[in-house]
Image (cartoon, rainbow, N blue to C red):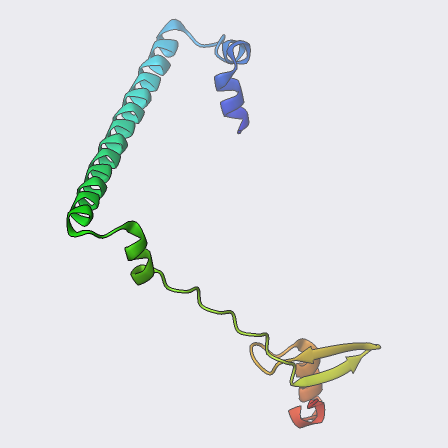
Length: 130
């Protein structure tokens, strides 16, 4: 939580923070907070109404399925798709040794700096084939 919210939600810290404000300023702050509270309540009511409507539609569909003789399990067999299989990582195609460290590259994506430096010196990729 931010420091502002810590102060706002802690009674004594909030009181100390607003002790410099006049009564009019405090009333202005109260009006603004009340407006925010009203907006939040309205938003919560709208979300609740949307969820109630959604649940009513789900129940209606369940009743239609029951009338036809279908179950949720019947839908699972039709709708469920297996997750796509991850492909195996590509094997390295090129290898170079720099300062005793072996660096490999699949040949895909951006060319590693060590390979690029060697290519700039005049060597070819075929020199690094595994």
